[in-house]
View 1: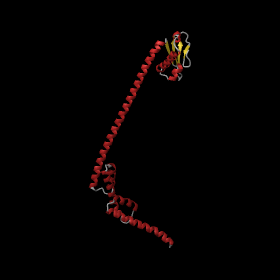
View 2 (view 1 turned 135 degrees about the horizontal axis):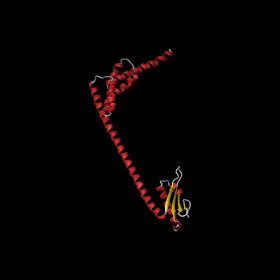
View 3 (view 1 turned 135 degrees about the vertical axis):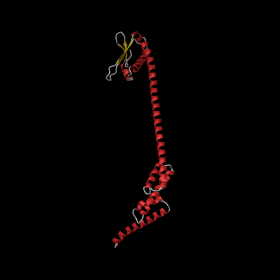
View 4 (view 1 turned 180 degrees about the horizontal axis):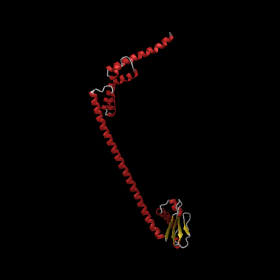
Length: 238
């Protein structure tokens, strides 16, 4: 007996629950509360004559949802739900008109989105061209500044030295950049003048030979024009 009661009680509760759910669905249908009716319908499953209400509930649920979305200009989802509604009643002329209107709005929206994308693409391309133009302009200005500095250094070198020899070894090895000078002219300079001249030579090599400041510094030598003896380098000045 106890076992029978234990089995019967859950079954009875289930029957009562479904009966109440069924009655709530009928009440929702009468009050046109389609969203509530739809959620309960999905939960109830197959019960009594609920299938007689199923198409109407689903149809009206999707219609009411789509109408609200259309009102809020959510045309794509409105069209989707109008089409869902048509699965339950494809003879409704009013629904067909709603689908036509939603399709028209979706097409207009797609045109607007496409135009917006094209405009954004043109804007990005314009910005890219402007950035490239600025880069090239900065490059030209940098080159012009380099050329002016090199021209100034060229005049200094031409006045101070008899000859300049730039020898590149390649293979990643720094070259040797020799500035030939008359020893009497070099010895007449103060230490600071010699240092400034050597610095100018290093910068000249850096710009002329297009090498790094480090390679220009290591390779630059001031040389006696008569005997090729070294008068100055990056480590010492005589």
